[in-house]
Image (cartoon, rainbow, N blue to C red; front, side, top):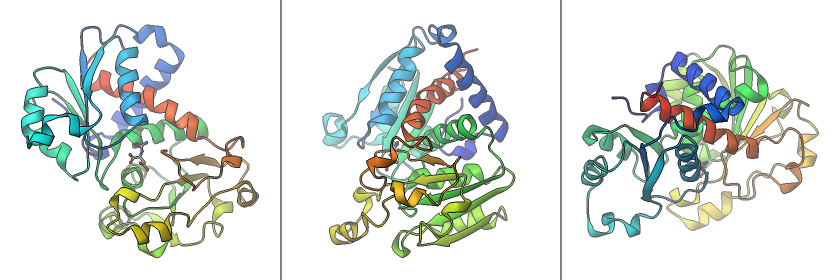
Length: 304
Ligand code: NCD
């Protein structure tokens, strides 16, 4: 049985197969509408979510399966003191596959050790978010036509932003990738990502505070929200939350075929005047999330 806890649980070849299946789903939706008849997905969300949970649920419904779960841990027995391990053991008797999001880093890994059905990490604290990364890879492949030879700017909260950690890990396995890491001093990428991913793989990367400095060289600009819920101190959040605001005027310096991404939700970091720009890909990106999750469910349930 296979789980998806970290993006490295999938080989580059497996990712490329998932992308191919997702593209086939986009083009031939009817072929897939009964693939998961009789199967159930449980979505256990101990933290807020819109896109991740709903795209998982829409994915399973479009495959012909059904969905159970909770979107607020206060309505689950967690509020009575039940452990994640016990919850997972029980839900494995009700569902064929589980997508879970938890504020504690490593909680999905612990769950996977106790689970009798596949576990998908739908975000664990400020750590990882592998299915957002699969979404991002499908978006990049569809919008740029390749996953290699790209200069990728990641901007905003690189410290707490789990989507950034998983995306850097994933992209470090492709050729010709350069990262431009754009953040305020306090929200720089964690040292463990620098050492274990960037340095270990001899990646080309640089850090800057200035979003405009390297904007003209980017193929992809991945904006992120400052992760309010991970701050210990409200004053720090307030000081940093509007550090970057991408707008039409700044984009004049960018390439015509730049792909602007954002895992969403957006707060202020992309001005709405960018939404009509042909380079804005973030709403399309959210839609790609459903198709790649369909492909992932098929893979983990070993549906042919
Ligand atoms: C992201 C997350 O939950 O980490 N959202 C998502 O899954 N699309 C990004 C965020 O919350 O800022």
